[in-house]
Length: 133
Image (cartoon, rainbow, N blue to C red; front, side, top):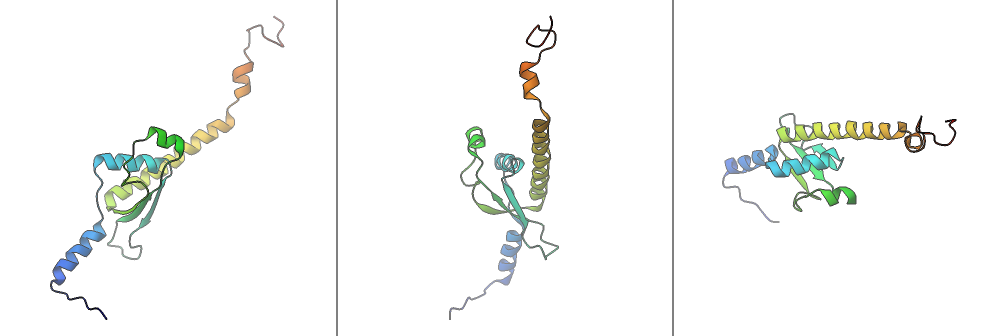
């Protein structure tokens, strides 16, 4: 059986605390993650749900659909990977996920109520078909 020698327990504690805090994304990476989150391509889970002191999140950013991928410039090391995000940025990313869901749902509701036929074929006062004038 292999044994692990502990020479500096303080160093191990520091590494564990750094791990629990998670990492901060730089501005460019956070904007990319936020765009994917808005599109619903972010999956988030608390790193340690049973530990109230650990506020960081596990975050997975999925690849966007083909149309979105055509327009978005994304880092390959950010998409398709799981990483630990610090509490502050994770909170903001969760808010962006919620905002994206609300805005996309509103777009779909508007689409469902839109009358394409009348927009294209009905023009009152133009003397078109069905009018006496």
